[in-house]
Image 1 (spheres, helix red, strand yellow):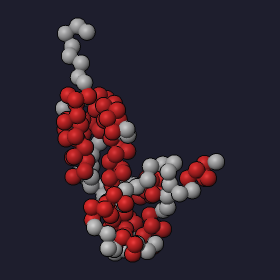
Image 2 (tube, one colour; image 1 turned 30 degrees about the vertical axis):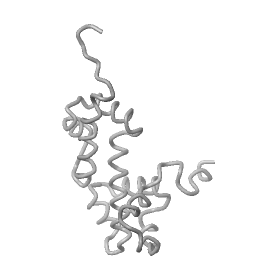
Image 3 (cartoon, one colour; image 1 turned 180 degrees about the horizontal axis):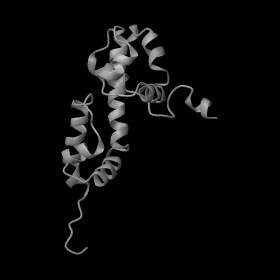
Length: 148
């Protein structure tokens, strides 16, 4: 290599964490790859490649997963409509939100909201958060049979 320092995994990791932490905190804000890349002091292309290499998913996918997690918590309460949950977590398209929710959770937001969630009532918050994480596509109940 001529005069260019090649950044390794360890060099980028703190910067990637900074952007990931921003997504965790500001999930309801309008975030896009260029804005997140600026947080990590990288170009958008480099940021997207490094994020995917480090975390196994694109920045958009990570952000949407966080948004769906938060939407699930709102919908479990039962006092928030699907549209309101969609808007509160930073999604601007109800159709895209519903599609992504169904893909990750395995049921529509309306069906999820209507279902009883008494099983998580006595579970500590730190455990409930882990249980509430959306399932990746292909892992949702019935996803394989629907694809087969």
